[in-house]
Length: 78
Image 1: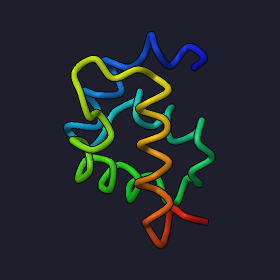
Image 2: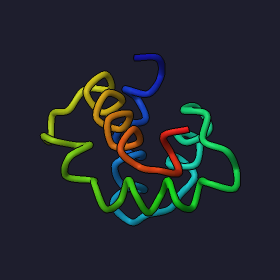
Image 3: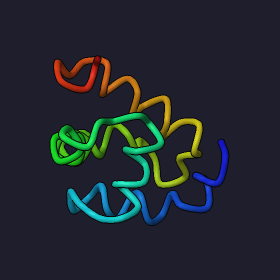
């Protein structure tokens, strides 16, 4: 899925620590509003093991898992 495959390592690193440029860019790509990006970072950090379910996760899997996590969150499900 798009250039995300090339960014997966950066997204994973940022998501694991709950902040970073790659994670911010991912949030923008997903349409997360600026006011909700800190919450997005916190939620995705808490669900890191679900989003990156394997060390060989593809961009498609990460996106699908991220959207699933977002759909269960009251703020991010909008």
